[in-house]
Image 1 (tube, helix red, strand yellow):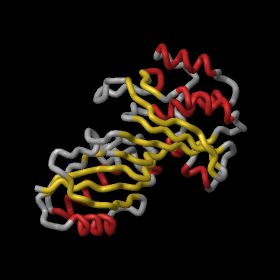
Image 2: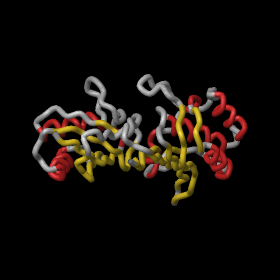
Image 3: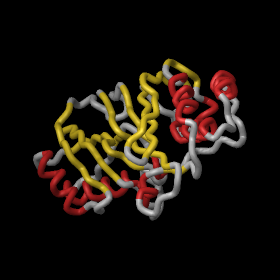
Image 4: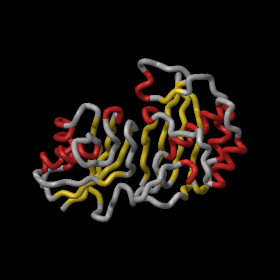
Length: 243
């Protein structure tokens, strides 16, 4: 038996998220597992570093699977890319120790959120939109306050499979790239929809409808303001996983 790790890049627009679901719902995990099972002639299950939501993308998702096949990892990946949809690409196959697990072995994950201040027919496929000019400094101030260990109860959806709410953020900042404002955040773990809730709160700050003190109150108390919703999924990318 071999434990194979792969890197997965995908455009999440047409998928109902990463995680396999019952019925005919199309997910990234479901597509890759179906292709692997066909190629390897055995039932195959993937473990992943992060379970991205519907419409969220990945530049470098990490996944692994156990196989008894004698096919070389490079051959498996070549075959995968021949049959998978063009919106999913697999690369960097490597055999890893038996106990390696893409989720549990990860030390840090990095997400990036791409934001436009005005709608775009072309660039909007991979970016959220604030529909107005933003106060960059106000957003940067809130981003900097996230560094450290916090309870992010106010900025996540309930997740019965992942009940803990404490995360340690090691980097958090906004920067400008071409026409985009980009939020980059790294942490040991992320809660369900956490980055999208944080982005929406910071957009509110940039629009002048949420000040730093109120944001701090939400973070400290775990009570979210009712007007805060998850930012559009199209702007979010799982960017990197560190082991």
